[in-house]
Image (cartoon, rainbow, N blue to C red; front, top):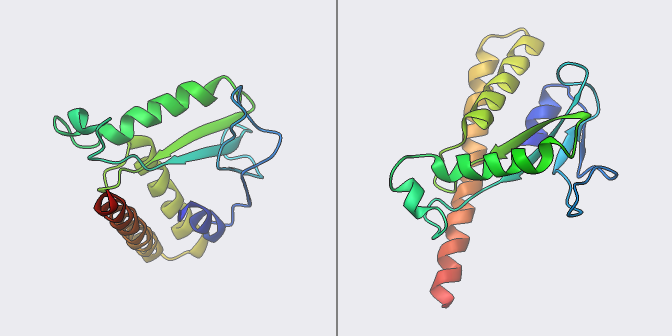
Length: 154
């Protein structure tokens, strides 16, 4: 996922799969910042890529675009919100066909603005947005290809 790359470009030190941070089921977030993100709290995140056309979500996505990303986002917030009180938790949810939940979209824009400010070049915001978009398209293309290959074997 391009999150680590973008955080690195933004000069934000991060730790992938931090030990010592877990919820009751023993699972832990995918990463966290090593410096405070907001209000003196470090940022922890967990990435989910739900299948837009998966049986579990198709009844939602047939009604409104992006609902397959919003539902897991809400579930992650409930799971980690009280388990990680010392961290500012952010679920990053992007559907296989592209839509993302509002928190993820806002987070990506915030990171790209930080890149623009740190570089001193206003165009860097647009370059970062385009770079992330291309990375996501490549990643999601692989997800779709893998799904097609798995279903072809059945």
